[in-house]
Length: 554
Image (cartoon, rainbow, N blue to C red):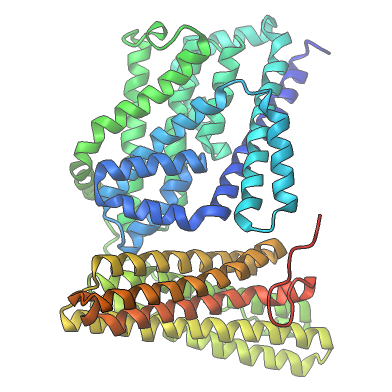
C-alpha cells in the first residue's frame, strides 16, 4: 500500500484540505482583528493609483487573499467612496501581494512550527484583547500552512517513480492547455489562488509535477483566482462589477498570453530560477508584477473599454420582497420565531445597504440616491410594524415563558434596527442635504474623520448581522467590546473637532454642527446594531448588569 496511487491521492487530498483551511484561518484572523484598519488603509490609498496599488499589495499580504481585497474594494466603489480607476489599481496591487504571500509561505520553516503553535494557542486562549486573540489565530494558521506543505512533501516522496503517476504528469507536461484549465478550475473550486499555487509549486519541487505543467497550472490559477471575485460580485453595483471584470480580463488575458509564451519556448524555465520550485513560483510573481506595472498607467482606458462591454440592463426586472413572516408558522413556535429572525435579519441587511450608500451624499448630493434611501426606510418601518404584530400574535397563541422571552428579544432587536434606519434616512440624509444646500464642505481632516468613523460603524453593522445569523458568543463579545471602542472614539473625534474650531479654521466653523451631528448619528447606529449581541451574552453569562464581563480563564 505504500506505493498505492489511491493512498497517495488520499494523503495529498488531506494535506490540501489542511492547506486550504489554514490559509482561510489566517485570513479570517486578520479580518476579525484588523478589518477597520484595513478598510481605512484601502480607502485612503485610493488617492493615487501607485499608492493604491501599494495599499492593495499590503492588504493582500496581510489577508493572504487578493479575493478578500477585491470584495472590500468593490464595496467602496459601490458606495461611491473610491474611484473606479483607483479600485482597479488596488486589485492589480493585490494580485502582486498574493504572489508575494506564496513566495513567503513556500520557504521551509519546519523549525518555526512549534514556536508558532505555542505562541498562537497561548494568545488565542489567554489574551483578553480581541486583537491579541486574533493574532493567535493567525499564528496557528501559519503553522498549519507549513505543516500541510510538509505533509504534501512526505506524501509525494515515495511515488515520484510510480508508473501511472509519472505517465499522468508527463501528459500534463506535454499538454499545457489542459494543465492551465485544471489550475484555473482548482483555484476556483478551493476559492484560494494562494492555496492552489502553493500546492502546484510543492508538487513541482518534489519532482511529481513537470515544470512546464506546473507553470501552466500556476498561470491557470491566476485566471481562477480572478474568477472567484467575479462570481462573488455578480449582484454588486455596476461600477464595482466593472473593476472586477477589468481585473479578470487583464489577469486572465495576461495569463493566456504568458501560456502562449511558455508553450512557444519564448519564456524558458531556465530564465526563472535554478530549481523547479523557483522556476514555477518566480513565474507567478513575475507575471503579476509585470502585469501590474504594464496596466497601472492605463487603468482609465481599460475601465472605459470594460464599461462599453458591461452595461446596466435597460429594463431590470424588479422582484417584490417576500416577507419571511409566514402566518401558517404561528402554530409552531420554533418555526415562527425562525421566521421572525429572518425578517429582522432582512431589516438589518436593508439598513446596512442604506448606511453604505449614505456617506456618498456628503461629497456629492444625488436626489435619486436620497429618494432610494428614504424609500428603503419606509420598507424598514413596514417590516418593523409587521414583525411586532406577528410576535404579538405568537405570544397570544403560545404563552410559554421561553416563547415570550425569545419574542421579546426579537421585538427589541427590531426596534433598535428601526431606530438605526431612522438615523440613516432622516438624520444623515438631512445633514448631507444641509451640507449641499449651504455650498460648504468638511475640512480635509474632518472629512477623513467622518469617513473613517463611518467605515468602522459599517464594519460593525456587518459583524452584527453575522452575529444574528450564527449566534456565536465570541463574535457577540467582540461586537460589544467594539461598541465601547466606538463610544470612546466618538468622544475623541468630537474633541478633535473642537480643537480645530479653536484654531479658527473656516471650513470647520461653517460645518461644525453637521460634523458633530453626523458623528452622533453614526454612534447611535453603531449602538443599535450592537444590541443584537446582548441577548446572546446574557444567556452565556458573559454580560454583567452594567458592563461586559471579563473573559473566562482558559
